[in-house]
Amino acid sequence: MREFLALQLRLVPDLVEVMQKRLSILRNIYLQQPIGRRSLAVSLHTTERILRAEVDFLKEQGLVQVESIGMFLTDTGLQILESLEGLIKDVYGLSDMESELQQRLKVNRVIVVPGQSSEVELDKKELGRAAANYLLSVLREQDIVAVTGGSTIATMAEMMSGNRQFPEVTFVPARGGLGENVELQANQIAANLAKKLGAQYRMFHISDNLSASVYQSIQSDPYISEMLDLIRSSQVVVHGIGRAVEMAIRRNAPSEVLKVLEQGKAVGEAFGYYFNKEGQIIHRMETMGLQLEDVKKARQVIGLAGGSNKAEAIYAIAKSGSINVLIIDESAAETVLKMEI
Image 1 (cartoon, one colour):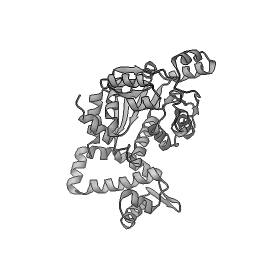
Image 2 (cartoon, rainbow, N blue to C red):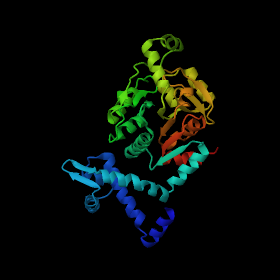
Image 3 (cartoon, rainbow, N blue to C red):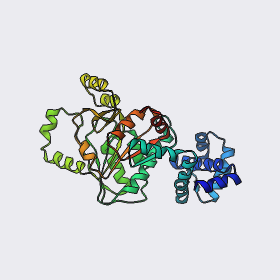
Image 4 (cartoon, rainbow, N blue to C red):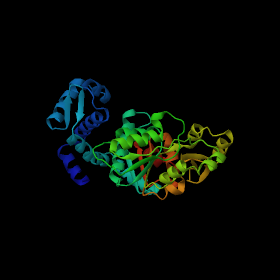
């Protein structure tokens, strides 16, 4: 493919530039649809006059549908967008970045999306879209899928397409709630994904911030016991990757725990486990839900993260063996590759 593209570029030097521009239009329409021409022009930092000619071309090709409420991508447009993105990855070196990260982090698959999702909302949606597409590609009927909370996983649910239905799949929260905004809680995300995919879901109405004594005393409750068995038998796990101290503070960890994390140089968190840069466990908090041994039994463990400030956390979680698929943005990927190991 690269040799063929190289020959094309010798004949049509501006081919990649034109392709990138039109793919950018398709991507922005898809992520914001329905969207008007003026809003799209602002998003692309161009003028309506320049944009009009490109939109007219894409409409004539059957890739874009224009209605009174705004523009939409057609099914053909979405197919074109997804098919050509791999080519653009080759051109801009993202494929090489993915391969290098796979070797360095020892994970089965790395997917890198353009941009910096921690700062640009559309880049975050692109990260969510990539995660949603990957999840669709690996789902099997009768799977139990555990998801964590957080804004990145919530964006994945938002970007999930409902074109395929999985009536025998069950979505569950990976653990109890952290008392965050309802939209960012694992219960709500599991329900949103299930509704998009015509799947089933179960909610786990219990706090994740329990003392060890309370945690032990309530495990025998029939409802809690049933839910824990269901969650811990998940075949697919989708989770965000957190920075250690930031996640400890969100969990209202006492000062002595924060001190342990600081002394142990913890940088990453997943499922209540805190890891140092080498992927070693520094501290473990009691959580109602998935344990690390459960995660490692799952068929697919998908970790999502965006932003250069997550680089150390990403490296730590990958080294811990807590993921086998990593989906990150370009800024995070570049920073991980620059780290001195």
